[in-house]
Length: 442
Image 1 (tube, rainbow, N blue to C red):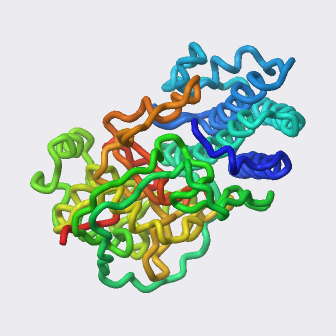
Image 2: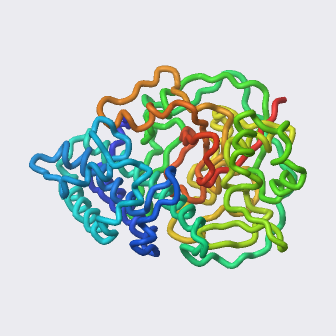
Image 3: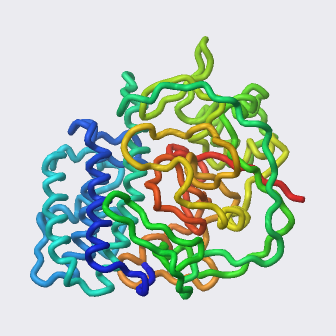
């Protein structure tokens, strides 16, 4: 995994960053019981308890075990239980059976976290630069799992007939519906995209312990995952992007017009998926005499027609775009448009509670609320090389059959994303906060 050495934080700043990230994970699970944190509702989702342990295993394995002389792992059984997909680290517990791990308990895992936290903070002042790079990587890795923890528990609770709320939702205040989409003409010709590992800029900063993220320029020399580079030229043809994402109200119109019943809107694989799974609406939507409702971390509530639609698959996003006479943007069109916007803005995760997409407050916004599907396959950029060792398995081996999403969501920790950030999922997946921004050719 490549990061920029010249901006590697000093030990005290990195210690504050590490402590803040680890504290946020603990805060997110505070409302959960041991049983809540153990359940697993589908193969794609993992128990909250497993997320807490896996991120701890990451720091223990790649930093403490490999870079602190004399360190001994806390429990020889944990590497088998909490390795995710690192083939170089040996055998591991099967992903679909993570929900069978009733032991260790949530309290034991929180104790494991506390022990590793203390060991890492104690060792951090003497860690070499490459080990500090791995601590920075581990912080960003844990932020990814914070979002997954929330979206996974949302799915777990959704299949419980009681449909419990993780926390009390904020009172709903009526807002005006967003106006018609305005189109932002995009850049054309050759544009530079991706993270620039060689640039040296002054705008990278490590936040204090009150925050969980760092702010960087879209092409700057701060932290980036390996799949975000190398920076390279991409050719953009005349196009425009919508100034906002598609709303629930607009999606309801798609449903009412037979959007899920008309094969002409759908890719062949998408139509087969709709038919096989009986898909008639976004995930977590239900229709009753009172209209559409949705299930969220605050329980089941009426669908807000002004809020961005969420929990739709790539197949649904592509079908809606065709129905609307538009298309999905390419990831490079999206990046070129978003590069001038504040990646720390918008509705992103700051603390537990009120994790849901919110109606637009006006003006173009590219970050927060929902991850935005693009029409681009998740493939390596020209010149991409995976890092040596186990951490080289982080992204590169998943560059097959998935599509890129951009922009972050209401469950993405603030400061985690940037214009070059590439998220990726399979086209049928929709348990994340995934939505749609339209594009069109000019």
